[in-house]
Amino acid sequence: MDEMAHLDETRDPLAVAESWRAEGRQVALATVVETWGSAPRPAGSHLVIDADGNFQGSVSGGCVEGAVVTEAAEVLDTGKPRMLEFGVADETAWRVGLSCGGRIRVYVEPLN
Image (cartoon, rainbow, N blue to C red; front, side, top):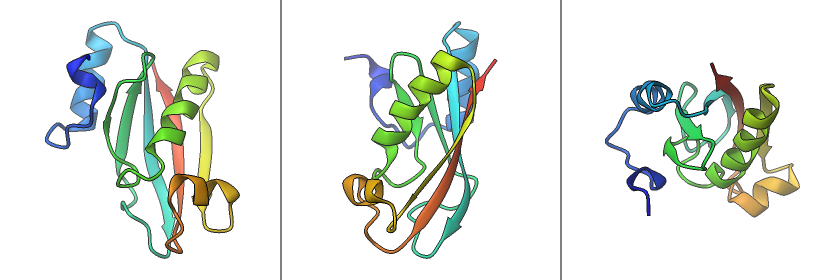
């Protein structure tokens, strides 16, 4: 398994993004831009994802990372950023673990 494939909370995701870009990897950056109620990570939290599905950082303490990584692959394929929202009113929230009453909005963009 690639050593970058797992979550290592000791590394700054923005530094990892810069390093991966320097290696020539396609990279997407996910940023928590807004939270409501009981949200696991504050606004400004980052998750960086490469085209192979490796990721670093956190936007949700683990509960929506899988969905964000999947969306990041689409962002890298199309080159178009997208805004994601997860919350208890959204059926997706229950599947990904946000049943605690919070909502988060995550902006996913390709880094060129």
